[in-house]
Image (cartoon, rainbow, N blue to C red):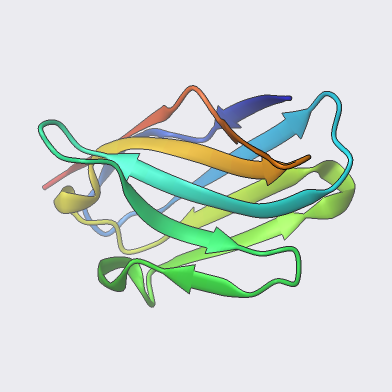
Length: 114
């Protein structure tokens, strides 16, 4: 299973970005899909995830600003990020659980300038 992320970049505080993660390969059923992030010197943390039943949960600091969604026909998960803050700066990683295993994307850099 391969995960390809896109949509990261540099944005000013208050701006928006949309991350995408497309899964390909031997996929039977996509279960939980999520986004994690890791800032320099910090541990990787869960930002948002969505189950196969569309149940979602979010990191407290992004609630009301970020929205996770999925398109099962395209095997893709999205993260819409609005009202971005400098503290959102990190490498964002896609994570997908399928076929009983978890897979990680290569990461995409999100930088928010003040």
